[in-house]
Amino acid sequence: MSQLVSNRIRTMAVKLGLPHLAESLNQYAKRADEAKMGYLDFLDLLLAEELAVRDDRRFRQGLRLSKLPHHKTLDDYDFSFQPELDPRKVKDLATLSFVEAKANAALLGPPGVGKTHLAVALAVAACRAGYSIYFTSLDDMVRHLKAAETAGRLTSKLRTYLRPSVLVVDEVGYQPLERAEANLVFQVISKRYEKGSIILTSNKTFSEWGQVFGDEVLATAILDRLLHHCDVISINGNSYRLKNRLQAINQDTDVA
Image 1: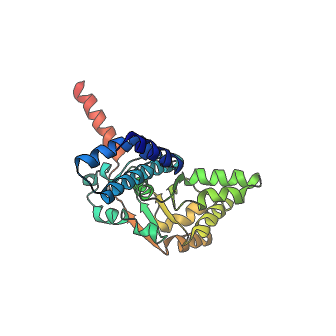
Image 2: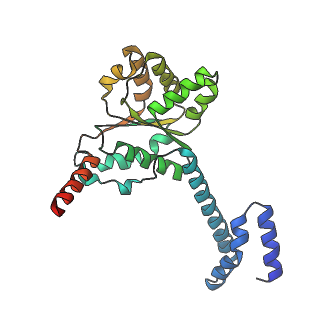
Image 3: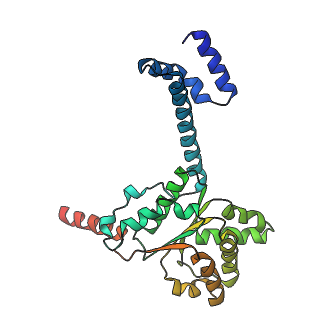
């Protein structure tokens, strides 16, 4: 490829908003020449590489805006430590068919069993697939909605939790809510119903949600919308955090 042609292609690539192509044109041309690619194969290479770069940029931007506490994946999860948990159920969720259907997923179990890890991993997978995601604890969501309501900005703040394709609501049940607070949660659940997916984690069984939300009728209304299209996974194993703590104690004892 002549230098004149290369410069013209770079200029056009920049005008078309293809910066990676402009920067890497010579590298791709060399690969095409070495592989004796035809014109269509060369074009396919250029477009595929540009698309991959854009997808990665979008993925990283999506993670940055998601408020996820960490970016763990399913590969990082130790299923062997939770023998009662069927990995196939989690991997079925990871196909994201529930997200495509605008359904929900609930991860239940005692503290420390990896509910948040799995919720984050599913959110990361959704982000990789092109879905927008947002993470919040239930307490943080309620606190922000209450502040917005007081300031007369509730409708605007609700969009934070209604806009993403996947909303992760962590730690449902760790603190009981007042009825007015529970009503704010109901608004989010109700407005997202069949319009977007929710992934939630809770240390309470659904039968205990009346205590969590301070009102049996309101809790039933929330559960009615949440569970209509929902995959539920219960994890009833040991705590990873306690496991790591006990290992550290044992190591300190051995050293002593």
